[in-house]
Image (tube, rainbow, N blue to C red; front, side, top):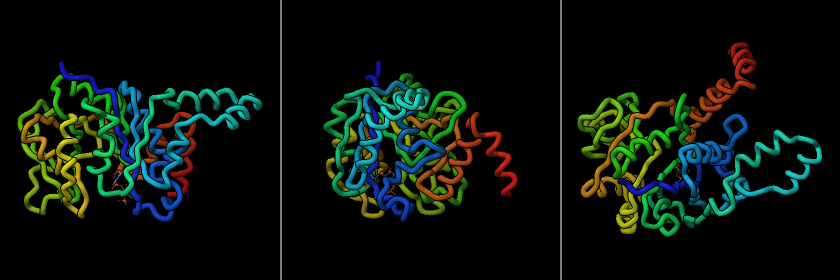
Length: 290
Ligand code: UTP
């Protein structure tokens, strides 16, 4: 039986340059989709999947994330005094229990692979989920991480969530080449980061959700740089594929790349429309705007 996945790593140390000036003093991961910060939405997804420990790889100017996952006694007292019990309960529900969160600093944003490597001591020698907080997956049933853990239970090894994108966009992503599967889960033959046009092995791109084995840390410790001079997680996974199995999951759900302005705006619209308390009125207002 495959070792259980108990921990999730959330890299949040990037500079968020595509979101300046909003991300100058506020971490990009604290930007809200409707009224929930991006980082809270992905932590909810991990908790729903049964993850027990939440590891954040942070940097300078990111302390708002740590504060967000802490108690706020003054606010709690004020809500209690005003009889706002529903709001108080909601705040309490969102909080991981004491001891379930850990924070480590990357010190310098040298790339996603380097951010993951910074979590090595906190993860230890066990498999873990890697969840990028700027990618949201809105699903009808189970969340993306829970879907991936189901696949992990069946296949073990390493699992990558993949999404088909239009052919002209494949060059911007890490891409997988797959063998024969069941229409949903496929063995991965090889991977390539940002393939030159005409050399793409498929249109299935690596999206921002992974289940990885701890041997990835051994490869990342070489600190080899790749595309853009950054230490890339895809390069390390390509090396790990030489000795371990990887499966790709075409998950159920709609993806929003909230690291881009367009994806972030669309996520706000989609999540607002899906909210029972807001959706109908919001749809009517948007129709008027258009
Ligand atoms: P991105 O490349 O989307 O984020 O990384 P970024 O670098 O902050 O954004 P831009 O491109 O400058 O606008 C995906 C995730 O990985 C984290 C980011 O914080 C983001 O959540 N990351 C990236 C790190 O933690 N460290 C890094 O060195 C790079």
